[in-house]
Image 1 (spheres, rainbow, N blue to C red):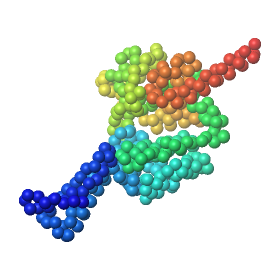
Image 2 (image 1 turned 180 degrees about the vertical axis):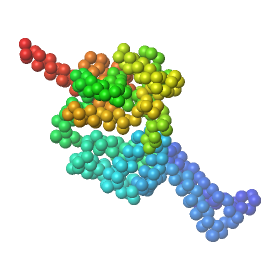
Image 3 (image 1 turned 90 degrees about the vertical axis):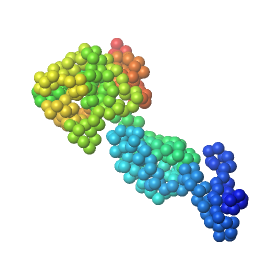
Amino acid sequence: MWVEELDNGKFKYFERYTEPYSEKVKRVSVTLESDSGRAKNKAVKILADRIDEKLKNYNRSDMRFDELYKEWFIYYKMHVKRTSWTKVPKMMKHINKVIPGDTLIRNIDEELIQKIVEEMYTFGTLSLNYTKQTKTTLSVMLNYAQQKKYISNNPALLVKIQPKKSEEEKRRKQMDEKYLDQKEVKVILDHVRKRNSRSLHAYIAEFLYLTGLRYGELQALQIKNYDGESIRVNGTLDYSFLKMAEAVKTAPKNVYSNRIVELSDRAKEILNQVIADNTFRQGEQAPDNYIFTSNRGTPLSLHSFNAILHKVEEELSFEKKLSSHIFRHSHVSLLSELNVPLKAIMERVGHSDANTTLSIYNHVTKKAKKQVINKLNSL
């Protein structure tokens, strides 16, 4: 610190510090009435506080993990859908078993994150996918800390999850159960159509199978999104913690989800019939009206749709677990069997990540190759 006497008789105290971004030396100052020992001590404290204020956004490695989570979670909720951020608190319970809230974030390393993986999956009972999602959530949080200059690197990026030996066979079996073949779809639809009270459920199941839409995208379809030949998928329905009558159409899952889906003749028949049924029950349909609605005039909830599928599963003693999403995977499987290029399938179903599409695509291709060999052997 140094001091300079001013023309007005006062004294200006200066101190230097290095600004982290540019690494340039800068200075702060304060003007006091005298250069006495007491004034100098006061200047030292004031200048130190001012430097700390300048640097507080650069040096936060002493931040606690619970403080980081609180700050990050507010930011995260502003950038993702409710269905995404509502899962985080439950994941944090698993993370906090290994990384307590009072842990300094500078001390979080690969070993701690690896321990989370081991407790959840390697030596635990939780699934590989859920463990991956939890690790990814932690990685997103630490990436935020790195961007804010709170830490210098993200240790989660270096942690890999090694699948168990039994995982490959389990995943192969799960992949078989992820989608339905054409015969299975026909059996299910024929059974659902046996009851008039399930007619809407049958239309929805078949439409999902023919288009590959996510259920939320189907719920959000409005009259104005259908031009007679194709549908514009431009949103999803968000009704977390809300009643269906209070549901809100929000932006789609990602930018790739915003798309136009060309319709087959049967898919167009379904839409035209459902719209006609709605007109008969509710009167003339406005452009903003949702298409797949229940007798109450609101979109059919996912819970109601899946509840019927679960009953059908029991009634048919079906081996595969039925849900809305199985029809989306079945659509990918159907297009794979028809030799539609992978990129075209991804664009149609709105996949941003090729892994999901590719896993089904490759699985169907392998099965097709095996069938070829079986047919050749039978000659």
